[in-house]
Length: 534
Image 1 (cartoon, one colour):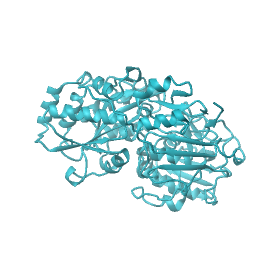
Image 2 (cartoon, helix red, strand yellow):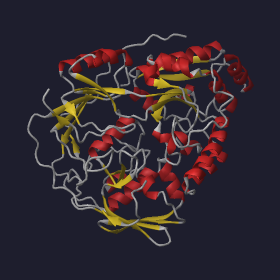
Image 3 (cartoon, helix red, strand yellow):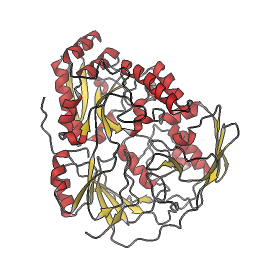
């Protein structure tokens, strides 16, 4: 089936166990007035609390105003960030962390160990790696204003890696972090390189960040999410421009400087403009995927979920979503394309896809009786919208009663949290994506958990799979993890916690006068950018 494209868009741990980190730079000096960067990101946030939601927009906001204990560099190695030094006891059960000098909140108060303890506890309520950590944790406690410790019941060698994983462990003020993760923090006071400018931000239209002149960057060069978070501009404005033609016209005219996810329809036009530059920031790419509500009919039945695997022809979905094969490829391994853990275990039965007869048979075996299937469709993310339309059409061909529920991505982020039936305002299906790199981190990747209501949206359950996933943090060698990945994938594609629709890379567009953008999976750091002539 051909779908018409629309002009809308969604828009190792460092070696050693105890060492000191180089000193930090002085606080950032005042920048030259007038240096403002205007950006159009993939979508626009409805909530700013990056622990309340896993949405990428909230995480990018978090990177701007908050800081983290550890961070991943461009080689995905763990580096200290807020931590000055850390150590682990001889029995490998107690980790001690000391904060570096110069950390302060945007309201002027000092960052303390108590803030860190409360933030870790809040983050671990919702982050899958944090949940695994807390199952093995005896206590997290403050030692003094700059020192805290994590006491474990058993050794956990990946602890710093978990603390550096995504969604990030943003350190919040203790009084904010004491709020349950199921309740939104409504203030925007962090200790990061940017301050949230509430006076200039316009709800639903734009968000303004000002350079935090009191922020003290690390001395190391910016590298991925790690290193010195040096801000070279005065202000960053996150504009909400959902219409792609409007955003492109603004970019061409110099009214904005950057579009994170331009529609593939516009790429050739952008490429031909001498003032503009296409750049793939996440070179590992992303995976378009389908989440199913495993708590409600019909997808509470594994046969219905298996039906989707039979139904999906990835080539058709990728063509409908992205158009140009230069930017996409198929994928069948749960552990991504070209990763150390990619494998073919238990993929032969659905690898070819596009089997509507097999899908119809499985849907009937699931006892499907015409219940309404609500498919959430984002109006501001072209690729997901097109894939949603194609999925609805294919499901209708096998007798499913499908209703598309269009809204902007912010509306989907709110609705997907509802566990109830479609009659109660819930949902059946929605299409999202995650980074290819994230597939190498099943202990922290929220999409790769199957712990029911404690897990991510869709809430699949498989005790067998979870017992295997728990072992990821217990094995030490690449070979052991590769063998474990095969076992996990075999079980996963039997119970089908999600369905991959294909892999892709997403070019971003910028004016050539904007340089220094940092390329990493999922989130866009706003530090390190520079304005140059041109």
